[in-house]
Image (cartoon, rainbow, N blue to C red; front, side, top):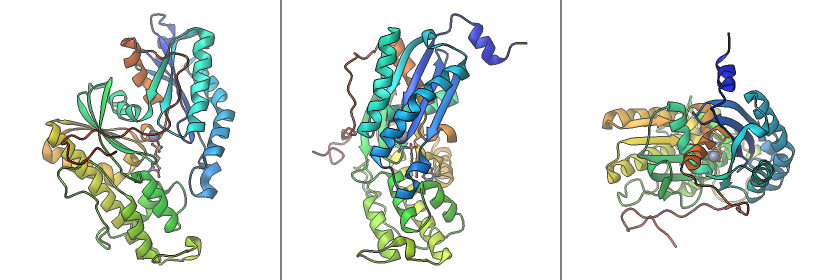
Length: 365
Ligand code: KG4
Ligand code: ZN
């Protein structure tokens, strides 16, 4: 009896795509068939390397990518049971991210494309986070509003189809995940902060502290801001001035209450703006991805609101929320449209600026 994987491998009409992801601190490679079957997937995490710094150190990240990228590709191909010469194309996340990290993935992808003489496909990492919903659900999710909430980005998109992503709102300062990480560090909860804050919040009162919810009451803005809430948490803990947070020794209930109140305020903003975007666009499908979408309270609030408003909601499954190469399957959409990149493709490290839906505030110079 053939296994499902062997059956796929025996079918010579299938084509295979290698996807690479090195935008931040995960080195990931995946092999996806043109029927969107995931045949190989590797994520080499660097969490332990960055843990003691309380955040990602770009230089360490790019060096670690250098060590891990070829073994990750080799493992993904072996899992898929194919040779590099079976690949129809190679895709790489080339924007946005840390410059040094992006360069490692892009150079690997370009080299493979050149040596095998196959097309190179550029993937926008944030679009790929939205596409994780399409891939996991097996459903046609477009047109939709896409919300990507990660350590580096908090962005809202209008996505009429899988090739068009119009940025309609984003954070004007910290990303939501970054705020989770910073608050975790102030509360002495460790890194990565999101899961640690979520765990602490489970035994806390979300109404104990009334933290700010930036722009939430402004119906003309689809933007986010999380630096104010970070400062508010700091003032609640210890006031201004230089502090060694590791020596604070806060009472456990206070830590839990701050974590729960902080989480609730961030979730209020994310949910509020996502549904405001749907309303403004007259859209009825919401796709949510990115590391923070792993947060259970966030998922629960999205589900409640979606069922109340009759919105079709897709949230990426947990292992596709955080960075991975599988979501690079969006490259098949570009492949089918003949959208390939030249071999002089450069990285684009920084995020793009949103276009205003209303003309009254979202765009900035
Ligand atoms: O998408 P991702 O893996 O990497 C980036 O592209 O940034 O997101 C990582 C972020 C980190 O800030 C992490 O603290 C946050 O996602 N995160 C969470 C949870 N799990 C990961 N935030 C809140 N609750 C979680 N359960
Ligand atoms: Zn990401």
